[in-house]
Length: 213
Length: 230
Image 1 (cartoon, rainbow over the protein chains, first blue to last red):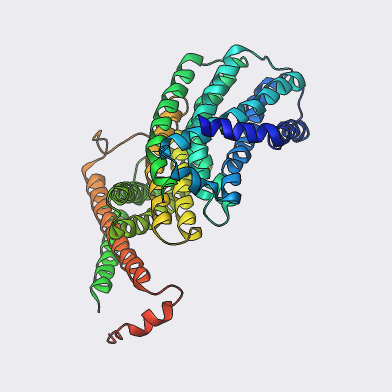
Image 2 (cartoon, rainbow over the protein chains, first blue to last red):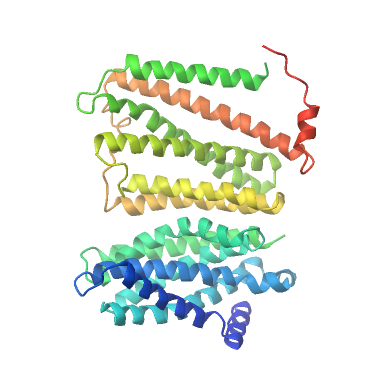
């Protein structure tokens, strides 16, 4: 918790990541507008895809930065010297990064609803938030890993994106249904919850091996 | 001739034998005609690839528990062979799909999850080549190896509920005529042997590389006793 507060405080003081991410997702929507011929008929079929693309790449940026400060100031070693367990430090980092991504979603979802004319409802928000939990757990684990490897900007997406696919499969379906497509919303959300539990447990078990040295 | 050369030779002969089984012994399929013969090697390489990734999973688990360098080398060797076999599976499957379905690719559960499998382990190999060799790289890779193996069945089952075109299992359901079944079982046994030999050879290479002082592969080559000419 203290780790999460430290990260959020430093973000609040510098305000470097959230505004950038917010602009980034709005830009993604603008690009989607030029890439697709969007009108009122096809907006709801295209919007879920645009949402996940924007979210996934914003997530990569957010998690990639999660360990940047620690790397630049070599403060991870100092944190590991404290009595806090590696899993706790990792959980703190993951919570902070997840909250940053949620802040970015708070820009993305209304912007999507506004610019694409798609519905913005509770089902949509729940699905996106549930996916964020698991994506943050996995994203932070691999960000911690690649922080100490060469070519980390290339490696982070390569390792993280395939492991995020379960969340995008289930979240993608839930969002499509929330925007009016036919399908089983409850089943997709139940899957998201299952994946969240599974990957949060697995990543907290693995955190020890990634952070310790 | 070293032990490895002999093993490799045996594997090649076995693969030629299974080619004979596939093209001469097995009957032509009534519906799919000649392209059906891709099936034998396509399924065999897929099973062999899964076996390789299972080895990666087990070896990675052992490495995280005991930090044994041998387990790490085994994981590296099996991951490389598994990626090669998955590539073969995907390419042969695409050709098969073009012949039967009329297109190279479709976003089917089995196809998608196999592609994800390939991407995950290709990333594993990339991580190995980019990370500084040592304990940390081995640990990171072991974590990727374990997560990768967990992820694939999830992708498979999560997409299988709404899109499918790839045929289901034909072996366990006893849908094959006996001659085809025999040809398939022989091919599968030979492919598994080939995969085993490739892992063994790769394991030997990894061992030699680990023993070599960093950045001096030439000295290892020089130290090797010259092989007698055949």
